[in-house]
Length: 405
Ligand SMILES: NC(=O)c1ccc[n+]([C@@H]2O[C@H](COP(=O)([O-])OP(=O)(O)OC[C@H]3O[C@@H](n4cnc5c(N)ncnc54)[C@H](O)[C@@H]3O)[C@@H](O)[C@H]2O)c1
Image (cartoon, rainbow, N blue to C red; front, side, top):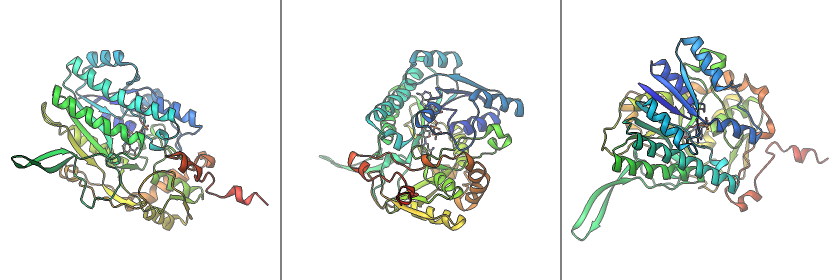
């Protein structure tokens, strides 16, 4: 297949591009490299040393003889170029990762909120409109998030996209399936909820074939392909905005920084290893919906954990201390989370569990590159409201307190 990987320079996009190229597909990465600019804006860098996208593609060719093509294009602002590229290249499948994906970044200031909504909503809508206009029958696979559902306790498992409801009508009760209601907890999650509606409309109106993967929090760094050469290494975000909770605990343990648990740590979240992500995308590609079918939705996660249990697990493995900090997010202190993921399991996914992979991550990645960490970028300081901003802890190590004497 000819596959366009939109956002293929990112944390999940790059290993996906390698995985699909390795399977023999013709892979085209489209990316505006905005994530690299955001690193510059925030004054942070990936824990792992990342080469330019062109250099990464060159090394892949040198190692495997396969080519990955790179196209510098902004999906949100360059509609005509996007349409032209799709019309000329006519991909069989399009995988859409190209959005601003950090909830804390989306809540930093009003400017970050506006950027996130403009970027994500326009990127998705431009893509859909261009697919219709060019008449390409490509299977669109989008990376959504489990976070669209919010994290209040419902008590029932979250189904794969659709909820059975019974509606009272004048002629008696009628059964229906509706999109599972969203309850986004940040501007970023709100854009992913809007994406769902855009997909529903274009599948129904234009017969676009769409799969939406509601992904859990990704942990880990390496996949079989990124391991093949030092310069193929994946990015690893550890800073307070882009670092995801478990990857942050791993680097905190590696540099003897207290594991930062916000609030009670009673937040339960869904997780998936990066190797399983790329496998899930391969599985989703092999099981495309037909034109006229409703959007196919998968829950792309393999296990759920409470944040404080994760901290205790990492602390038990490494001896790291835990720091209990005020929560800069507006969210429930404690929640349960039960998620159905039967579709991927039935397609043959064999999940990598935290228990298997965690220690290797600490040793092979976090400790190896610990010298690249800027401790001042570790605290999570983006607050969800002005009130919450008052109590954000900027110095979890307490250096400020110690230096008073
Ligand atoms: N990382 C996770 O834990 C996680 C969890 C759930 C869902 N997701 C979803 O998976 C997708 C990929 O996540 P990631 O962690 O790889 O993010 P990332 O930020 O590392 O990668 C996103 C890529 O998209 C590019 N991009 C952004 N806007 C663009 C635009 N307008 N035009 C072209 N390129 C653009 C960026 O430059 C970047 O390379 C995201 O949509 C995210 O919402 C990620």
